Image (cartoon, rainbow, N blue to C red; front, side, top):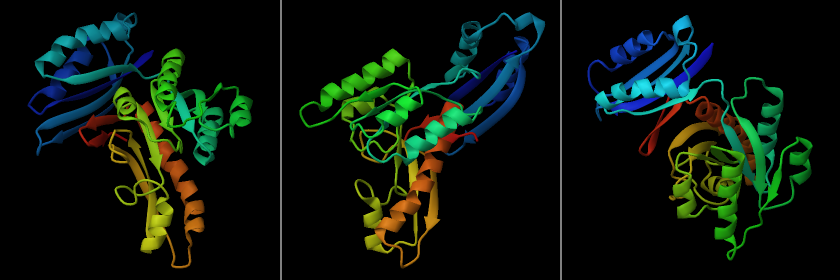
Length: 287
C-alpha cells in the first residue's frame, strides 16, 4: 500500500472538497486523514489530505501518475498544490554554532524515535565544538568558519552541501549567523530557525538579557521560517514559561533551553509531515 499527502491552497469557492474527494474515489484511493480550513475574510481555502491507493486497479500508480491526473482539477480551481509520498522522510541538514541543546535533542530523536519524520544527513557549523558528537552519530560534519570576508563563499558551500546531500530543509539549531538576503531567498520555505524569545518581542542577540531587564514574567521560544527580515519570518510554533522576580538572566537562559528544544522539534515534525502551508507572513498548520 502506497500513501500520499496532498496539500492545496486556492481561492475559496463551492465544490472543492467534493471534487477532490471524487478524484480520489475515481483513482481508487482511500482517504486516511483530511483537514480543511476556509479563510472567509481573505477568501482562501487550505487543505491537507493523506490517502492510500489500496484497490487493485491503482496499485501500479505512483506519485508522477497521480500528479499528472490531478493537474486538470488543480487548474480548474486555480490551486497551488503539492503531492508527496507519505512514507519518504524529508532529508534535513542542521546548522549549529556553540550551543548544542537543540542539536543534541534532534540527534537523539533521530536515532531513538521510529516516528521521527526526517532523515538527518549532516551538520554544518562555524565552530569545531560538536565534530566528535556528530561523527559519533555517523553523520558528516562540515566545518565552515565565517568572517566578513568569506561569508558569501561559505553560504554558497551550504547550498552546495544541501544540493549534494539532497537536503530539502535547513534547520538553524542555534546557528548564530545572520543569513544574507540572497541566502534567505534561496531557502524560502526551506529553512527553519529557533529563536530563544517569544517573538515579536526581544529580537536579535541576548533576548534573555533583554527580557530580564524588562522584568518579564513570561518568556518563551519561537520556531519560524527564515526570511530576510531578521526574526520576522512566518511563525510555526511558540511556547512560554513563567519567571519569578529572583530569576536572573542566566537562570532564564538555562530554563529556556528546554523550551527551545521542544518548540524546534514540534516545528520540524509538522514541516516534515507536510502539515504546514505558508500563507504570506503566517502559517496554516493542520496538526
